[in-house]
Length: 153
Image (cartoon, rainbow, N blue to C red; front, side, top):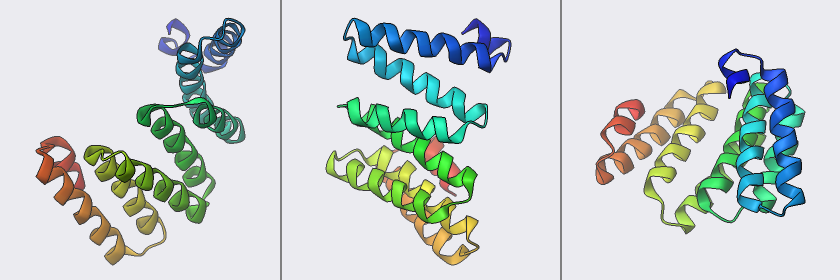
C-alpha cells in the first residue's frame, strides 16, 4: 500500500504479484482472490488492459462469492470500455446483471444497470441510456439507497 500511496504502481504490482504467488503456494484462496483483485486494479491504472483482463478472469474462475465475482466482472467491463469495445462491455455487464438478479442483490443490480446505461451513453443512444438509468434509480429508491439514487439521477 505504501507503493500505491507514492503512486508507484509498477512496484505495487510486483508486490501484489508476489502476494498472489505466496497465497497460491499455501492454498489460501481468499488471500489469493484479494491480491488478484488489487493487482487487476493496478493493471487498469497502469493501462495494462490485457493483463487486467487476464487477472480478472482468474478472479472470476476462483471466486465463490457474489462480491468477488462482481469485482472481476467490473474489471472486465472497465477494460472493454477503455478499449472502446462497447458490445463486450455491455455483454459483461449483462452477465453481472444476471448474477445479481440470481443472487437477489438489489444494490448490485442497480449499480450494474448504471454500467449498462453507460454503454448506451457511449454509443450515443441517450434515450436508452436514460431508460436504463431510471430503472437503476427506481431500484435504489425501493431499497433506500439514497446516495446511489442520487448518482442515477
